[in-house]
Length: 126
Image (cartoon, rainbow, N blue to C red; front, side):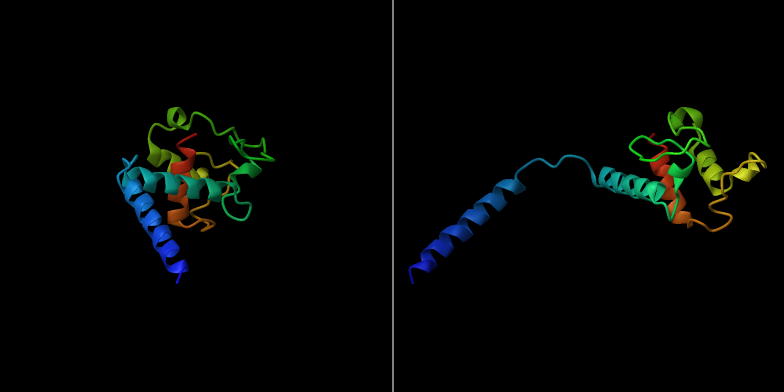
């Protein structure tokens, strides 16, 4: 029976801490969390050697063993003010440049439409 009061003290301490945390201000919005999540998923796909594999040809901040065949992916908002054009470039770069060696990720179904959207969200932050 001696353990019962200590369990009550522990339980009340946990409740007090949980109540205190509930009073803390929430930072960020659900939309910001969703965007960050999509951006992180896009980064993972971009760096994945079996999926986007952008590092095979491009230098990307935070990437290891980056290639130098394609241009470094920097200042992407300035280079592609229209995000739809960036998406079109990833989907099928041969439309803008028939001689490109960039794979047509969408046309050849290397990536799904959702995966391309996530990669665009990530690349657009660079």
